[in-house]
Length: 506
Image (cartoon, rainbow, N blue to C red; front, side, top):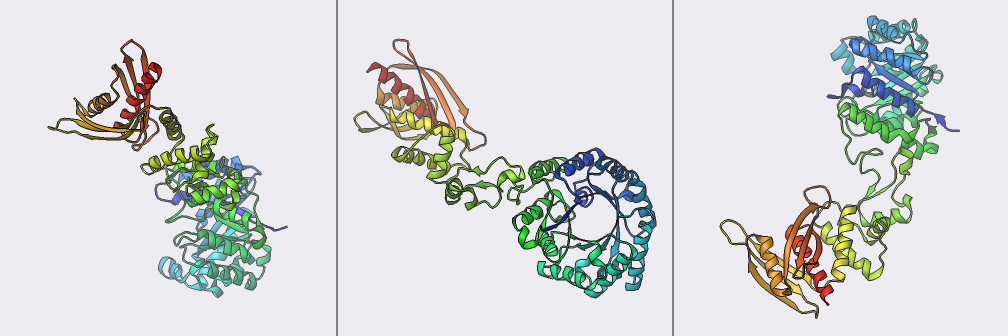
Protein backbone atom coordinates (compact mmCIF):
# COMPACT_ATOMS: atom_id res chain seq x y z
CA UNK A 1 0.00 0.00 0.00
CA UNK A 2 1.15 3.53 -0.77
CA UNK A 3 1.20 6.26 1.89
CA UNK A 4 -2.07 8.06 2.60
CA UNK A 5 -1.64 11.78 1.90
CA UNK A 6 -4.06 14.01 3.79
CA UNK A 7 -5.77 16.75 1.80
CA UNK A 8 -6.01 19.97 3.80
CA UNK A 9 -8.38 22.33 2.00
CA UNK A 10 -7.90 26.05 2.62
CA UNK A 11 -10.36 27.42 0.04
CA UNK A 12 -12.37 29.02 2.84
CA UNK A 13 -9.34 30.69 4.41
CA UNK A 14 -6.40 31.26 2.03
CA UNK A 15 -8.67 30.96 -1.01
CA UNK A 16 -10.92 33.71 0.31
CA UNK A 17 -7.89 35.98 0.63
CA UNK A 18 -7.76 36.16 -3.16
CA UNK A 19 -8.79 39.74 -4.03
CA UNK A 20 -12.49 39.82 -4.93
CA UNK A 21 -13.20 36.31 -3.65
CA UNK A 22 -14.61 37.06 -0.18
CA UNK A 23 -17.55 34.93 0.95
CA UNK A 24 -20.23 35.31 3.58
CA UNK A 25 -21.04 32.61 6.14
CA UNK A 26 -23.85 31.01 4.15
CA UNK A 27 -21.67 30.79 1.04
CA UNK A 28 -18.87 29.22 3.08
CA UNK A 29 -21.29 26.62 4.40
CA UNK A 30 -22.35 25.70 0.85
CA UNK A 31 -18.72 25.16 -0.12
CA UNK A 32 -18.01 23.29 3.13
CA UNK A 33 -20.76 20.80 2.26
CA UNK A 34 -19.12 20.24 -1.12
CA UNK A 35 -15.73 19.75 0.58
CA UNK A 36 -17.31 17.04 2.71
CA UNK A 37 -18.66 15.37 -0.46
CA UNK A 38 -15.11 15.53 -1.82
CA UNK A 39 -14.02 13.69 1.35
CA UNK A 40 -11.24 16.12 2.27
CA UNK A 41 -9.37 15.28 5.46
CA UNK A 42 -9.10 18.80 6.87
CA UNK A 43 -11.16 21.96 6.27
CA UNK A 44 -9.42 25.19 7.22
CA UNK A 45 -12.60 27.12 7.89
CA UNK A 46 -11.20 30.59 8.56
CA UNK A 47 -9.30 33.02 10.76
CA UNK A 48 -11.69 33.59 13.71
CA UNK A 49 -10.00 36.66 15.23
CA UNK A 50 -10.13 38.53 11.91
CA UNK A 51 -13.88 39.32 12.01
CA UNK A 52 -17.17 38.27 13.64
CA UNK A 53 -18.21 36.79 10.28
CA UNK A 54 -15.13 34.59 10.10
CA UNK A 55 -15.63 33.50 13.69
CA UNK A 56 -19.23 32.51 12.95
CA UNK A 57 -18.18 30.66 9.80
CA UNK A 58 -15.65 28.57 11.72
CA UNK A 59 -18.19 27.85 14.46
CA UNK A 60 -20.92 26.70 12.07
CA UNK A 61 -18.59 24.65 9.86
CA UNK A 62 -17.23 22.95 12.98
CA UNK A 63 -20.78 21.90 13.85
CA UNK A 64 -21.53 20.87 10.26
CA UNK A 65 -18.48 18.63 9.77
CA UNK A 66 -19.02 16.34 12.75
CA UNK A 67 -16.75 13.30 12.47
CA UNK A 68 -16.42 13.62 8.68
CA UNK A 69 -13.41 15.95 8.69
CA UNK A 70 -11.03 17.83 10.95
CA UNK A 71 -11.97 21.52 11.16
CA UNK A 72 -9.05 23.89 11.48
CA UNK A 73 -8.86 27.56 12.51
CA UNK A 74 -5.91 29.84 11.77
CA UNK A 75 -4.18 32.10 14.29
CA UNK A 76 -1.06 34.17 14.65
CA UNK A 77 1.36 33.40 17.46
CA UNK A 78 -0.79 35.56 19.72
CA UNK A 79 -2.75 34.32 22.73
CA UNK A 80 -5.94 36.27 21.95
CA UNK A 81 -5.95 34.76 18.43
CA UNK A 82 -5.67 31.28 19.92
CA UNK A 83 -8.41 32.03 22.46
CA UNK A 84 -10.73 33.08 19.65
CA UNK A 85 -9.93 29.99 17.58
CA UNK A 86 -10.53 27.68 20.55
CA UNK A 87 -13.88 29.38 21.20
CA UNK A 88 -14.96 29.06 17.55
CA UNK A 89 -13.98 25.36 17.55
CA UNK A 90 -15.66 24.48 20.83
CA UNK A 91 -18.38 22.38 19.14
CA UNK A 92 -16.04 20.64 16.70
CA UNK A 93 -15.66 16.89 17.10
CA UNK A 94 -12.22 17.01 15.45
CA UNK A 95 -10.79 20.48 16.15
CA UNK A 96 -7.37 21.73 15.08
CA UNK A 97 -5.68 25.05 15.86
CA UNK A 98 -3.24 26.24 13.20
CA UNK A 99 -0.74 28.68 14.65
CA UNK A 100 2.72 29.83 13.69
CA UNK A 101 5.24 32.53 12.88
CA UNK A 102 7.57 33.73 10.12
CA UNK A 103 10.95 31.97 10.06
CA UNK A 104 12.81 33.52 7.10
CA UNK A 105 15.43 36.26 7.55
CA UNK A 106 13.09 38.61 5.68
CA UNK A 107 10.15 37.96 8.01
CA UNK A 108 12.16 38.01 11.21
CA UNK A 109 14.15 41.11 10.30
CA UNK A 110 11.68 43.26 8.37
CA UNK A 111 8.23 42.20 9.55
CA UNK A 112 8.54 40.82 13.07
CA UNK A 113 11.84 42.51 14.02
CA UNK A 114 12.93 39.66 16.26
CA UNK A 115 16.01 37.50 16.63
CA UNK A 116 16.25 33.80 15.85
CA UNK A 117 16.12 32.96 19.56
CA UNK A 118 13.00 35.08 20.01
CA UNK A 119 11.42 33.37 17.01
CA UNK A 120 11.98 29.91 18.50
CA UNK A 121 10.68 31.10 21.88
CA UNK A 122 7.48 32.51 20.37
CA UNK A 123 6.95 29.40 18.24
CA UNK A 124 7.16 27.12 21.28
CA UNK A 125 4.95 29.41 23.32
CA UNK A 126 2.11 29.53 20.79
CA UNK A 127 2.09 25.75 20.33
CA UNK A 128 2.15 25.14 24.08
CA UNK A 129 -0.68 27.61 24.59
CA UNK A 130 -2.82 26.05 21.84
CA UNK A 131 -2.27 22.60 23.37
CA UNK A 132 -4.23 23.79 26.42
CA UNK A 133 -7.38 23.86 24.26
CA UNK A 134 -6.98 21.09 21.67
CA UNK A 135 -4.85 18.01 21.22
CA UNK A 136 -4.36 18.58 17.49
CA UNK A 137 -2.10 21.60 16.94
CA UNK A 138 -0.59 22.52 13.59
CA UNK A 139 2.39 24.86 13.44
CA UNK A 140 3.18 26.88 10.32
CA UNK A 141 6.71 28.11 9.67
CA UNK A 142 5.78 31.06 7.47
CA UNK A 143 8.10 31.71 4.50
CA UNK A 144 9.93 28.45 5.18
CA UNK A 145 10.80 28.35 1.47
CA UNK A 146 13.28 31.20 1.99
CA UNK A 147 14.53 30.20 5.43
CA UNK A 148 17.91 28.84 6.48
CA UNK A 149 17.83 25.02 6.50
CA UNK A 150 19.49 24.60 9.88
CA UNK A 151 17.40 27.30 11.57
CA UNK A 152 14.18 25.88 10.11
CA UNK A 153 15.10 22.45 11.50
CA UNK A 154 15.75 24.05 14.89
CA UNK A 155 12.30 25.69 14.96
CA UNK A 156 10.50 22.55 13.81
CA UNK A 157 12.26 20.36 16.36
CA UNK A 158 11.32 22.80 19.13
CA UNK A 159 7.60 22.87 18.22
CA UNK A 160 7.46 19.09 17.85
CA UNK A 161 8.89 18.81 21.37
CA UNK A 162 6.27 21.33 22.53
CA UNK A 163 3.45 19.12 21.26
CA UNK A 164 2.73 20.08 17.66
CA UNK A 165 0.99 17.22 15.85
CA UNK A 166 1.37 18.73 12.37
CA UNK A 167 4.21 20.90 11.06
CA UNK A 168 3.44 23.02 8.02
CA UNK A 169 6.36 23.91 5.73
CA UNK A 170 5.03 26.64 3.42
CA UNK A 171 6.63 28.13 0.36
CA UNK A 172 4.69 31.27 1.16
CA UNK A 173 5.94 33.33 -1.77
CA UNK A 174 6.14 30.54 -4.37
CA UNK A 175 9.87 31.26 -4.62
CA UNK A 176 11.38 27.77 -4.57
CA UNK A 177 12.28 25.42 -7.38
CA UNK A 178 10.71 21.96 -6.92
CA UNK A 179 14.02 20.15 -6.43
CA UNK A 180 15.14 22.72 -3.84
CA UNK A 181 11.86 22.53 -1.95
CA UNK A 182 12.03 18.75 -2.01
CA UNK A 183 15.57 18.92 -0.61
CA UNK A 184 14.29 21.18 2.20
CA UNK A 185 11.66 18.61 3.22
CA UNK A 186 14.21 15.80 3.06
CA UNK A 187 16.61 17.81 5.24
CA UNK A 188 13.92 18.16 7.89
CA UNK A 189 13.04 14.46 7.69
CA UNK A 190 16.73 13.61 8.21
CA UNK A 191 17.63 16.20 10.87
CA UNK A 192 14.59 16.86 13.08
CA UNK A 193 14.24 14.64 16.12
CA UNK A 194 10.71 13.25 16.48
CA UNK A 195 9.53 14.35 13.03
CA UNK A 196 8.57 10.77 12.24
CA UNK A 197 5.83 11.06 14.87
CA UNK A 198 4.07 14.07 13.33
CA UNK A 199 2.40 14.94 10.04
CA UNK A 200 4.58 16.99 7.72
CA UNK A 201 2.48 19.35 5.63
CA UNK A 202 3.33 21.49 2.58
CA UNK A 203 1.58 24.73 1.64
CA UNK A 204 2.80 26.08 -1.70
CA UNK A 205 1.96 29.19 -3.67
CA UNK A 206 1.85 29.59 -7.42
CA UNK A 207 3.80 32.81 -7.98
CA UNK A 208 6.09 31.09 -10.49
CA UNK A 209 3.43 28.65 -11.70
CA UNK A 210 4.94 25.70 -9.82
CA UNK A 211 2.67 25.17 -6.79
CA UNK A 212 1.60 21.68 -7.85
CA UNK A 213 5.19 20.66 -8.66
CA UNK A 214 6.41 22.04 -5.32
CA UNK A 215 3.76 20.11 -3.38
CA UNK A 216 4.57 16.87 -5.19
CA UNK A 217 8.28 17.40 -4.53
CA UNK A 218 7.37 17.71 -0.85
CA UNK A 219 5.40 14.46 -0.95
CA UNK A 220 8.20 12.65 -2.76
CA UNK A 221 10.56 13.62 0.07
CA UNK A 222 8.38 12.70 3.04
CA UNK A 223 5.43 15.12 3.41
CA UNK A 224 2.11 13.42 4.21
CA UNK A 225 -0.28 16.39 3.97
CA UNK A 226 -0.88 18.85 1.14
CA UNK A 227 -2.60 22.19 1.70
CA UNK A 228 -4.55 23.28 -1.36
CA UNK A 229 -7.66 24.98 -2.70
CA UNK A 230 -10.37 24.35 -5.28
CA UNK A 231 -9.32 25.92 -8.61
CA UNK A 232 -6.00 26.97 -7.04
CA UNK A 233 -7.73 30.00 -5.49
CA UNK A 234 -5.62 32.06 -3.09
CA UNK A 235 -3.33 34.99 -2.38
CA UNK A 236 -1.68 36.62 -5.41
CA UNK A 237 -1.27 33.88 -8.07
CA UNK A 238 -3.03 31.34 -5.83
CA UNK A 239 -2.28 28.08 -4.06
CA UNK A 240 -1.75 24.50 -5.10
CA UNK A 241 -4.92 23.40 -6.93
CA UNK A 242 -6.48 20.40 -5.21
CA UNK A 243 -7.71 18.87 -8.45
CA UNK A 244 -4.23 19.02 -9.99
CA UNK A 245 -2.26 17.56 -7.12
CA UNK A 246 -4.80 14.81 -6.38
CA UNK A 247 -4.98 13.67 -10.01
CA UNK A 248 -1.17 13.82 -10.28
CA UNK A 249 -0.95 11.43 -7.34
CA UNK A 250 -3.57 9.20 -8.93
CA UNK A 251 -1.50 9.06 -12.13
CA UNK A 252 1.87 8.62 -10.36
CA UNK A 253 0.93 6.98 -7.07
CA UNK A 254 3.53 4.24 -7.26
CA UNK A 255 6.39 6.64 -8.05
CA UNK A 256 5.36 9.04 -5.28
CA UNK A 257 4.35 6.27 -2.86
CA UNK A 258 1.16 8.27 -2.32
CA UNK A 259 -2.61 8.16 -2.57
CA UNK A 260 -5.56 10.19 -1.29
CA UNK A 261 -9.14 9.34 -0.37
CA UNK A 262 -10.61 12.22 -2.38
CA UNK A 263 -13.84 11.62 -4.32
CA UNK A 264 -12.50 12.96 -7.60
CA UNK A 265 -15.85 12.69 -9.39
CA UNK A 266 -16.90 15.83 -7.50
CA UNK A 267 -14.12 18.00 -8.97
CA UNK A 268 -16.09 19.62 -11.79
CA UNK A 269 -19.06 20.30 -9.53
CA UNK A 270 -16.79 21.76 -6.84
CA UNK A 271 -14.92 23.90 -9.35
CA UNK A 272 -18.09 25.39 -10.80
CA UNK A 273 -19.54 25.97 -7.34
CA UNK A 274 -16.49 27.90 -6.15
CA UNK A 275 -16.38 29.89 -9.39
CA UNK A 276 -20.05 30.76 -9.06
CA UNK A 277 -19.80 31.89 -5.43
CA UNK A 278 -16.53 33.82 -5.69
CA UNK A 279 -16.97 35.19 -9.21
CA UNK A 280 -13.44 33.96 -10.01
CA UNK A 281 -13.79 32.19 -13.36
CA UNK A 282 -11.52 29.32 -14.34
CA UNK A 283 -9.41 29.83 -17.46
CA UNK A 284 -10.43 27.56 -20.33
CA UNK A 285 -7.05 25.78 -20.46
CA UNK A 286 -6.87 25.16 -16.69
CA UNK A 287 -5.75 21.60 -15.93
CA UNK A 288 -8.44 19.09 -14.91
CA UNK A 289 -11.40 21.52 -14.57
CA UNK A 290 -10.91 23.99 -17.44
CA UNK A 291 -13.46 24.01 -20.28
CA UNK A 292 -10.80 22.76 -22.70
CA UNK A 293 -9.23 20.14 -20.42
CA UNK A 294 -10.90 17.30 -22.32
CA UNK A 295 -11.64 19.08 -25.60
CA UNK A 296 -9.91 18.23 -28.88
CA UNK A 297 -9.90 20.35 -32.04
CA UNK A 298 -6.80 19.12 -33.86
CA UNK A 299 -7.65 16.55 -36.52
CA UNK A 300 -4.71 14.32 -35.53
CA UNK A 301 -5.76 14.37 -31.87
CA UNK A 302 -9.41 13.81 -32.70
CA UNK A 303 -8.59 10.78 -34.83
CA UNK A 304 -6.46 9.30 -32.04
CA UNK A 305 -9.01 9.91 -29.28
CA UNK A 306 -11.83 8.44 -31.37
CA UNK A 307 -9.79 5.29 -31.97
CA UNK A 308 -8.64 4.97 -28.35
CA UNK A 309 -9.20 7.66 -25.75
CA UNK A 310 -5.87 7.35 -23.94
CA UNK A 311 -3.86 8.20 -27.06
CA UNK A 312 -4.31 11.84 -26.04
CA UNK A 313 -6.06 11.70 -22.65
CA UNK A 314 -4.26 10.43 -19.58
CA UNK A 315 -7.37 10.89 -17.43
CA UNK A 316 -10.81 9.46 -18.10
CA UNK A 317 -13.12 12.54 -18.02
CA UNK A 318 -15.63 10.57 -15.94
CA UNK A 319 -13.05 10.34 -13.13
CA UNK A 320 -13.33 14.08 -12.48
CA UNK A 321 -17.03 14.48 -13.18
CA UNK A 322 -16.92 15.40 -16.86
CA UNK A 323 -19.45 13.53 -18.98
CA UNK A 324 -17.15 12.70 -21.89
CA UNK A 325 -14.37 13.98 -24.11
CA UNK A 326 -15.31 16.85 -26.39
CA UNK A 327 -14.63 16.71 -30.10
CA UNK A 328 -14.63 20.37 -31.13
CA UNK A 329 -15.14 20.84 -34.84
CA UNK A 330 -12.94 23.55 -36.32
CA UNK A 331 -10.99 24.13 -39.52
CA UNK A 332 -8.29 21.87 -38.04
CA UNK A 333 -10.65 18.89 -37.73
CA UNK A 334 -10.26 15.96 -40.08
CA UNK A 335 -12.58 13.49 -41.81
CA UNK A 336 -12.66 11.17 -38.77
CA UNK A 337 -14.01 13.82 -36.40
CA UNK A 338 -16.62 15.04 -38.89
CA UNK A 339 -17.76 11.48 -39.66
CA UNK A 340 -18.02 10.72 -35.91
CA UNK A 341 -20.12 13.81 -35.19
CA UNK A 342 -22.38 13.22 -38.21
CA UNK A 343 -22.99 9.65 -37.07
CA UNK A 344 -23.93 10.95 -33.61
CA UNK A 345 -26.50 13.12 -35.36
CA UNK A 346 -27.82 10.15 -37.34
CA UNK A 347 -26.10 10.72 -40.70
CA UNK A 348 -23.86 8.06 -42.26
CA UNK A 349 -21.56 9.15 -45.07
CA UNK A 350 -18.68 7.30 -46.68
CA UNK A 351 -16.29 7.87 -49.58
CA UNK A 352 -17.20 10.57 -52.07
CA UNK A 353 -20.30 11.59 -50.12
CA UNK A 354 -18.21 12.21 -47.01
CA UNK A 355 -15.64 14.14 -49.08
CA UNK A 356 -18.42 16.34 -50.44
CA UNK A 357 -19.75 17.13 -46.96
CA UNK A 358 -16.21 17.66 -45.68
CA UNK A 359 -15.48 20.22 -48.41
CA UNK A 360 -18.62 22.16 -47.46
CA UNK A 361 -17.69 21.80 -43.78
CA UNK A 362 -14.23 23.31 -44.35
CA UNK A 363 -15.79 26.24 -46.18
CA UNK A 364 -17.89 27.01 -43.09
CA UNK A 365 -15.13 26.18 -40.61
CA UNK A 366 -12.76 28.68 -42.25
CA UNK A 367 -15.29 31.41 -41.43
CA UNK A 368 -16.18 30.30 -37.88
CA UNK A 369 -14.22 29.51 -34.71
CA UNK A 370 -16.31 26.40 -34.07
CA UNK A 371 -18.83 24.43 -36.11
CA UNK A 372 -21.82 23.33 -34.04
CA UNK A 373 -24.29 20.48 -34.51
CA UNK A 374 -26.89 22.88 -35.90
CA UNK A 375 -24.37 24.05 -38.50
CA UNK A 376 -23.82 20.45 -39.56
CA UNK A 377 -27.55 19.85 -39.88
CA UNK A 378 -27.79 22.91 -42.13
CA UNK A 379 -24.77 21.76 -44.16
CA UNK A 380 -26.20 18.28 -44.70
CA UNK A 381 -29.56 19.67 -45.74
CA UNK A 382 -27.91 22.18 -48.08
CA UNK A 383 -25.78 19.45 -49.63
CA UNK A 384 -28.82 17.23 -50.19
CA UNK A 385 -30.67 20.12 -51.82
CA UNK A 386 -27.80 20.75 -54.22
CA UNK A 387 -27.65 17.07 -55.24
CA UNK A 388 -31.23 17.12 -56.53
CA UNK A 389 -31.14 20.66 -57.97
CA UNK A 390 -31.74 21.44 -61.65
CA UNK A 391 -30.01 24.80 -61.27
CA UNK A 392 -27.10 25.32 -58.89
CA UNK A 393 -25.56 28.57 -57.70
CA UNK A 394 -22.00 28.98 -58.96
CA UNK A 395 -21.46 32.59 -57.94
CA UNK A 396 -23.15 35.74 -56.74
CA UNK A 397 -21.83 39.26 -56.28
CA UNK A 398 -23.74 42.36 -55.19
CA UNK A 399 -23.00 46.06 -55.14
CA UNK A 400 -25.09 48.44 -53.06
CA UNK A 401 -24.94 51.49 -50.83
CA UNK A 402 -26.00 55.12 -50.74
CA UNK A 403 -26.45 56.62 -53.34
CA UNK A 404 -25.59 53.52 -55.43
CA UNK A 405 -28.30 51.47 -57.13
CA UNK A 406 -28.31 47.86 -55.81
CA UNK A 407 -27.05 45.50 -58.50
CA UNK A 408 -26.32 41.77 -58.55
CA UNK A 409 -24.31 39.50 -60.81
CA UNK A 410 -25.36 35.84 -60.62
CA UNK A 411 -23.86 32.73 -62.22
CA UNK A 412 -25.96 29.54 -62.37
CA UNK A 413 -25.21 26.09 -63.75
CA UNK A 414 -28.17 24.71 -65.66
CA UNK A 415 -29.63 21.21 -66.10
CA UNK A 416 -27.35 20.51 -69.08
CA UNK A 417 -24.24 21.61 -67.20
CA UNK A 418 -23.99 24.94 -68.98
CA UNK A 419 -23.19 28.13 -67.05
CA UNK A 420 -24.90 31.45 -67.56
CA UNK A 421 -24.13 34.81 -65.94
CA UNK A 422 -26.49 37.80 -65.82
CA UNK A 423 -26.62 41.15 -64.04
CA UNK A 424 -29.73 42.98 -62.82
CA UNK A 425 -30.74 45.67 -60.36
CA UNK A 426 -33.48 46.04 -57.77
CA UNK A 427 -34.77 47.93 -54.74
CA UNK A 428 -32.18 46.15 -52.57
CA UNK A 429 -29.37 43.61 -52.98
CA UNK A 430 -31.60 40.56 -52.46
CA UNK A 431 -34.24 41.90 -54.86
CA UNK A 432 -31.47 42.40 -57.43
CA UNK A 433 -30.22 38.82 -56.88
CA UNK A 434 -33.72 37.40 -57.33
CA UNK A 435 -34.33 39.37 -60.52
CA UNK A 436 -31.03 38.09 -61.95
CA UNK A 437 -32.02 34.50 -61.08
CA UNK A 438 -35.42 35.04 -62.73
CA UNK A 439 -33.68 36.09 -65.96
CA UNK A 440 -31.92 32.71 -66.12
CA UNK A 441 -34.54 30.32 -64.76
CA UNK A 442 -37.52 32.06 -66.44
CA UNK A 443 -40.42 30.58 -64.50
CA UNK A 444 -43.46 32.60 -63.44
CA UNK A 445 -43.76 32.93 -59.67
CA UNK A 446 -44.60 35.34 -56.91
CA UNK A 447 -42.39 35.61 -53.78
CA UNK A 448 -44.88 35.47 -50.90
CA UNK A 449 -42.62 35.00 -47.87
CA UNK A 450 -38.99 35.65 -46.94
CA UNK A 451 -37.55 34.86 -43.47
CA UNK A 452 -34.02 34.78 -41.98
CA UNK A 453 -32.93 32.90 -38.85
CA UNK A 454 -29.54 32.30 -37.25
CA UNK A 455 -28.74 28.58 -37.25
CA UNK A 456 -26.47 28.84 -34.19
CA UNK A 457 -25.31 31.35 -31.61
CA UNK A 458 -22.71 34.05 -32.13
CA UNK A 459 -22.01 36.79 -34.62
CA UNK A 460 -20.43 34.27 -37.00
CA UNK A 461 -23.52 32.03 -37.08
CA UNK A 462 -24.79 30.53 -40.31
CA UNK A 463 -27.89 32.28 -41.58
CA UNK A 464 -30.74 30.14 -42.91
CA UNK A 465 -33.23 31.76 -45.26
CA UNK A 466 -36.69 30.34 -45.88
CA UNK A 467 -38.79 31.56 -48.81
CA UNK A 468 -42.22 30.71 -50.17
CA UNK A 469 -43.02 31.21 -53.84
CA UNK A 470 -46.40 30.89 -55.49
CA UNK A 471 -46.54 29.43 -59.00
CA UNK A 472 -48.85 30.73 -61.73
CA UNK A 473 -51.34 27.99 -60.88
CA UNK A 474 -51.42 28.97 -57.19
CA UNK A 475 -49.20 26.15 -55.86
CA UNK A 476 -46.80 27.18 -53.06
CA UNK A 477 -43.21 25.94 -52.93
CA UNK A 478 -40.88 26.31 -49.95
CA UNK A 479 -37.16 26.82 -50.42
CA UNK A 480 -34.32 26.95 -47.89
CA UNK A 481 -30.68 27.96 -48.08
CA UNK A 482 -27.92 28.19 -45.48
CA UNK A 483 -24.56 29.95 -45.59
CA UNK A 484 -22.39 32.30 -43.58
CA UNK A 485 -23.23 35.04 -46.10
CA UNK A 486 -26.88 36.10 -45.96
CA UNK A 487 -26.89 37.11 -49.64
CA UNK A 488 -25.70 33.64 -50.64
CA UNK A 489 -28.25 32.02 -48.26
CA UNK A 490 -30.99 34.09 -49.87
CA UNK A 491 -29.94 33.10 -53.40
CA UNK A 492 -29.77 29.41 -52.44
CA UNK A 493 -33.19 29.53 -50.79
CA UNK A 494 -34.89 31.16 -53.80
CA UNK A 495 -33.16 28.80 -56.20
CA UNK A 496 -34.22 25.82 -54.06
CA UNK A 497 -37.87 26.88 -54.26
CA UNK A 498 -37.67 27.39 -58.04
CA UNK A 499 -35.98 24.01 -58.47
CA UNK A 500 -38.87 22.36 -56.63
CA UNK A 501 -41.36 24.20 -58.80
CA UNK A 502 -39.56 23.16 -62.00
CA UNK A 503 -39.16 19.53 -60.85
CA UNK A 504 -42.90 19.26 -60.34
CA UNK A 505 -43.67 20.83 -63.71
CA UNK A 506 -41.47 18.20 -65.35
